[in-house]
Length: 169
Image (cartoon, rainbow, N blue to C red; front, side, top):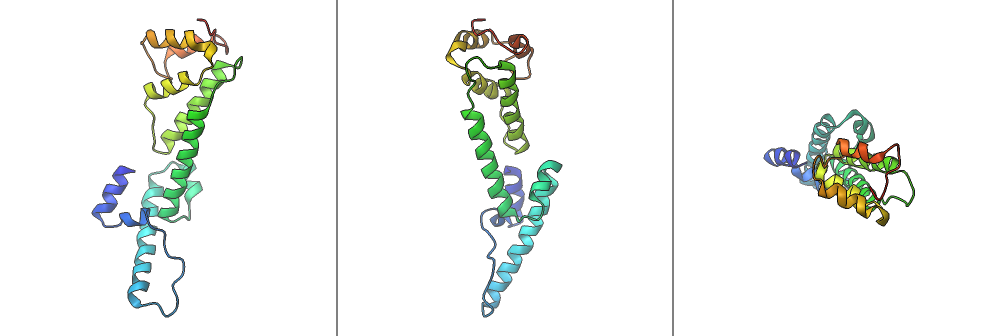
């Protein structure tokens, strides 16, 4: 997003990310207003094409035929909702640690697709914080033995023990 904004600023087109296109102008609108709207439409179309070219095919399908401002607004909303779900997700007592961690990893992957990647260590900390109190000893052991503190690491696989973690491990 930062790189996009820098490039657009250089071309003096970054305004299309922050301002929606005026839908209709009255027939008696000044020529300058009509020209400004036409320029905004053209700039927005160009920026939308650039944005679409940098997206995954899955996200491209969602945003085809959208103007740049609408894309940014929807991406921000999706990022916010995914982040809120990720941060707010708590493992229920007695449920599968494996299933919970996989669910949390899907949030991390979705945020990365939205160009809002979490580092492995931060993602791991959020996941550990989502465990119930009965996992406090597990969390303490996990954080004290600070090797391979990544959600991709073998420590998670060892901890799952067939889908249920031993909270006292």
